[in-house]
Image 1 (tube, rainbow, N blue to C red):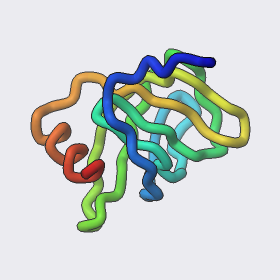
Image 2 (image 1 turned 30 degrees about the horizontal axis):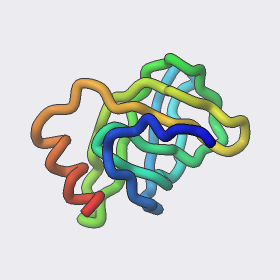
Image 3 (image 1 turned 60 degrees about the horizontal axis):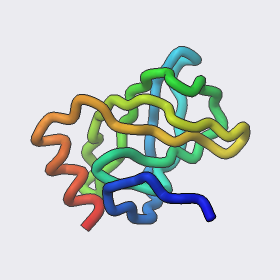
Length: 99
């Protein structure tokens, strides 16, 4: 059995997202979210270790912008992202999304 190394509670979501990285600007959906990271369902390419900027559309319609490092990439499916350098207001916005 594979051990889950995540320490943060993860919740399933279906939030619109847009992200930018080395390959340019892309769109996708956040399917899995925690205070530590997320999974972005997207067809665009990223490289493991790449830093990307992700904007998550909140239910209010506002966009939450966070930075992260790509931890996994699955061609045609999407990528895992570990958030980095979250400010307190970004952490609070994430908490509200995962309640």
